[in-house]
Length: 326
Image 1: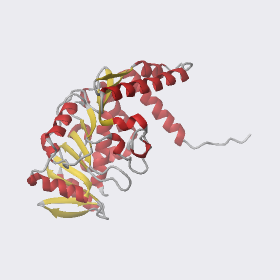
Image 2: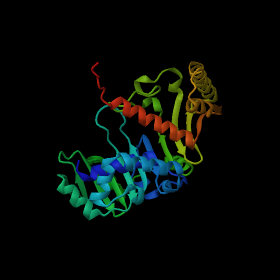
Image 3: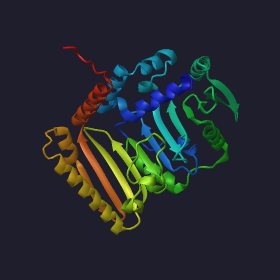
């Protein structure tokens, strides 16, 4: 797609990495535009990232290493670190083939300038329901600014359906809205499923995950729903919660996962990396009723070290090897 796609891609990357310090419930207008049959819904509140030490650290990493980020600011004046407030994404079609769904972003947008630059870069435009959709040359994906503070992007049928939902009144069920508000109101970045995770097949090209789709085996098929969230602070806490069919299954799941963790601890017993040790020590697994709860707590400073290690590993992997002549 044109410039608009790069804007959304960079903004999404920033928000996903940065997270926030103070959570608040998801924007109700954005939530009303999500398809009623959504299977996976995720969101990030970006507003407080600037006051989070870890958020500031990640912003600095992005600014220092992403040329596209600098081009975004220079060409459009849109700076995600300043102008982006919240992101919400949803899909009702998780599986093989091209991904479909929508991503909504709340922010401050110079719509005229962004549209002009996108068109100059080869994007097409279409008016639908009184709204201009900026589309890639193949008219596969698009983005529409519903006003100067709200944009919806995705495959064009999904974008048009979201535009229609402004007036149709079709929206998520009250139970799903309650679930979303629960997680978005307490976590800084979050994701929920409205269907059993084993029914979800990762899109092509995405690494397989045990317990999903064709990889679902045994006890993992007992999970009826799942959600996860990340909370930033002096200690970064990642929480995962799964709902089992009954209390016995929840207990069995907890025992199985704890066994896997114990095996991992035995295999890394001679590992002197303090970050790995802290990660394993900060992990807790428990069952309460039909709920399986998993939490990982890691000091902010050690999380920064892990990010640095991952960055160095990536750099070494892509760095060309030079054969020196003797």
